[in-house]
Amino acid sequence: MNTPLIYGADYSVYVRIVRMALEEKGIDYELVPLDIFAADGIPAWYLEHHPFGRIPAFEYDGFRLFETRAIARYVDEAFDGPSLQPNDPRGRARISQIVGLLDAYGYRAMVWDVAVERLEKAPADEALIAGGLTQAETVLKVLTSLKTKGPWLLGDQLTLADLHAAPIIAYFVKVAEGRDMLARFPDIQAWYSRMADRPSFAKTEKVT
Image 1 (cartoon, rainbow, N blue to C red):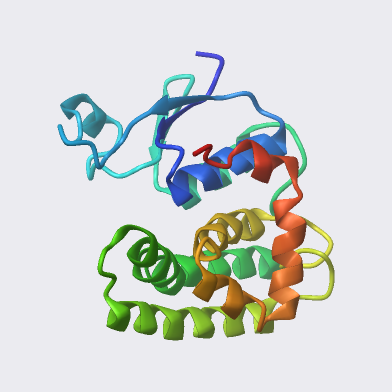
Image 2 (image 1 turned 30 degrees about the vertical axis):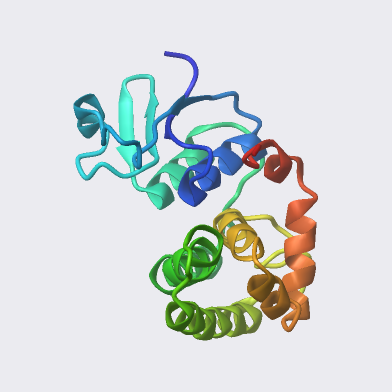
């Protein structure tokens, strides 16, 4: 197997993170469509790739991997192309910190509690949205405090931290509340605009 396989759906934030990493490395890959929300449920064969039935899962040359941060780090370290991690331990620790805070505090609030609730529920749970926005504000404040001088979150080098954050914020700004809140954090808004201009971002955007 000479082409990495990514199992998942193009609507998934976490599938997009992995796809963006491959795009930034200049690696061709195949997206194997898998909708975990399909009416028929998760196919039994997929549990061999991800025992918890989540997406994405990764396969290359007989090597299987699941969990987005593990896949993205493997892609960076196993394939040629521009490095997506700094050499110094502090920089790598900062990536882990940003990825961790986004997973623990940003994803659920910004994607599900705000964007999905507003876009797909009728009527929307306004209390859930309000709570999500409060959490999102804290996340954006922390990202602002952690961002170093330069175009990207860690400065002059695009890293896995940028690739992890961009798809989450992309979903958040699908709704007016998300766009309005992002505008209150100009450093992060300017960073996001730069991310949105990258080919890896455009190539992985879900076509509706």
